[in-house]
Length: 476
Image 1 (cartoon, one colour):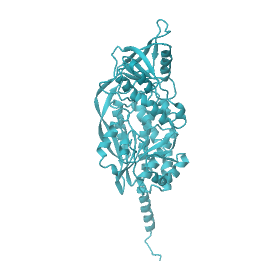
Image 2 (cartoon, rainbow, N blue to C red):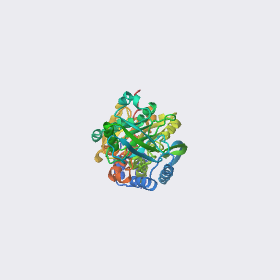
Image 3 (cartoon, helix red, strand yellow):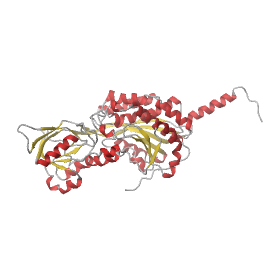
Image 4 (cartoon, rainbow, N blue to C red):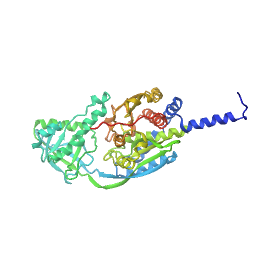
């Protein structure tokens, strides 16, 4: 039976329903997901924040003034968006690059008075040569097995690991696997050479686009066996290999990095507090620090800016999530993951309240969809999100048992499902850890699509009603 109601009551009820929808639309609501996607595509917020971090600050290696400036910059930007900001203290390594030169001073067929410069860059954690440098014979190996087979030749020599980066794999969507194989030599090769008594270790740069650019990165060198270690360009590694085949080869190497006392730094944590499930958390993140050769635009400034833009997108729509969406700008991913470990130690006891965690750390190439460490039984739940992302070509959903991404791997082992954009990374390792990782390499359209992907995913996870399950990381 129809009943009379006061004029305007219908409008009041409608407005209350609208407010409720803005407060917490269901995660699988197609209209809300479409609005989030389209709002992100129309915004340059992430580009502007990437420009701020790269152009105004520059390199941001842990312990540096640049890293400290990035903490302040991101924290202030998130406060402007109305987020609750916390700076979580982190003690970080403080490694400082010094002089770095290499010169081939003797080889068979060398004309009198001739030497050849080698373009190189010290690797993170490298030890130092004497100030005047060291001169030693070079031994070139192409695998760990060859190093072991020639162990008796290593003592007192400079070991070069000449292992090519497989760009063919990268071009076919397997860039991560190609990088993993190559970076194994950068990470572990110097330590293994040190254990055999090498005077120094060199690695062929891990990456594509051979324009005589060295690709730096971390090593597993430890005090007590911290020999000088550097990445040489692909061209110089190939030259040294050719010369070594002609006969004995000697090199003069100067590396003068310093390891200073651990420095004080911070993870930047910003919360968009949820409504009725505020004690449950969805992380969206990237890492603040970069290597010191360039401004770290792809690795990882643009990804941090994309995570920040999630908050900007939802603010423009006046959307409030049911669960708390937590931005984390991690510190010290590149050479220690101290920020991730600090957060993990503080949150191990309440890992169950972390529903999901997103991290972007593979540049900001074109996104094709998502990778996720959810149970196979949860795949069907993500159909609405896939449908919302399909118009921008990002509807792929790729499930795997563990993503093992740097900053999230500890949480993932505690059962927190990890998510990462599934990206075109075929050109990413052209710039990765080099002096060429600058803002001009970022495609503004792809960046906006990354923001759309991360914003829609964060909203979906923060509002979905049915549990997505927990990550189950296989034992190794």
